[in-house]
Image 1 (cartoon, one colour):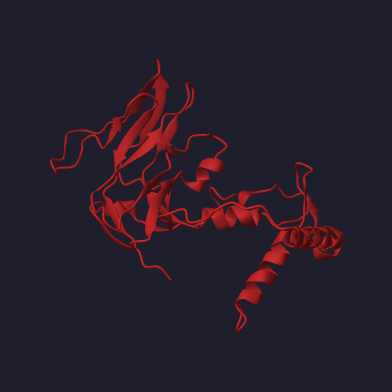
Image 2 (spheres, rainbow, N blue to C red):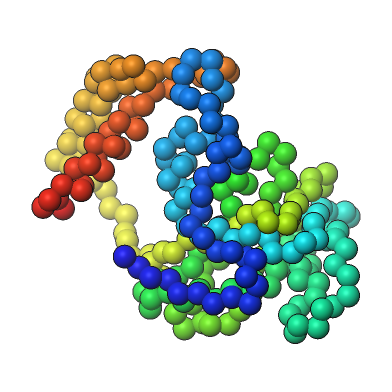
Length: 244
């Protein structure tokens, strides 16, 4: 269990473990059955990825609409006078060509071997309106960097508008190993054969594994719970005493 300690200068950022909102950006609470529309929460890999980090909420009462005109970012909001608190005002600023920044009034302290990875909020991938701000990925080693950082966002293409709404999540932060300590190596013959055999066994057993869980959505897309059922079994085995 890793502990991430935080301090903030803007409580309304309200950092919390990301929640998959249903109903909401995660879809509607339609059951997995014939005739239902497919929703993001139906997909276990997406649901796990979406809830893996910490989400931050837009902390201002003023809605901000971001667009592009003549290759320049347009930050449309009625910010009013500088409140005199010492923070950047307005809090969002143009940054080079095609980007803009926000001064994040939040400090997250991680262990020496960990880092923060900024990400778009997962609702960026579920919004039919394509109006969700696009946070640019960045790795921040905050074990030794207590400075308040600015977050970079990508300007939407011409004709699109990204919107920051009061109280709405606008980005996600993941906590990862600071160093990418892995290497790529081809499988040996024995390992590759074992993986191939497992692949074929799952394929051959799919009808049994998916029994009573296969359904066709309103868009005539076929789904089944093969992955979900194996996932549950794997998690149950991992919790058994003595499991490695």
